[in-house]
Length: 102
Image 1 (cartoon, rainbow, N blue to C red):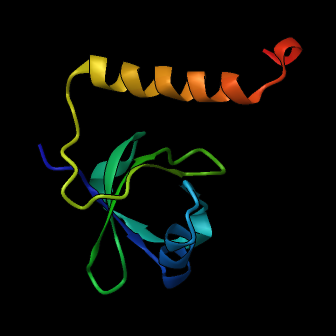
Image 2: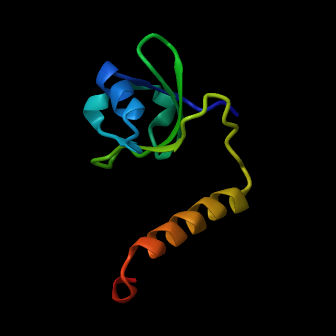
């Protein structure tokens, strides 16, 4: 299955290059109609260059959250892949929190 494309503005591409893991609505030129609900989308710059993949949520104040910066990323349909990403994020957060903040 091919994911819909989210076309970024130049400022959106600069933000990604700067290392940010999310993009705001003003970093977005448009999203294909197929992405009317929350889902994975391909990111593309204004010149048509692939920029990676993100989770799209049209009702969020932060509508794009980066999953991969790789253009050749193959989204996994396997729920265990997604669970491993969530588990890794939780572990990384727990390492950074003080013992009483968990």
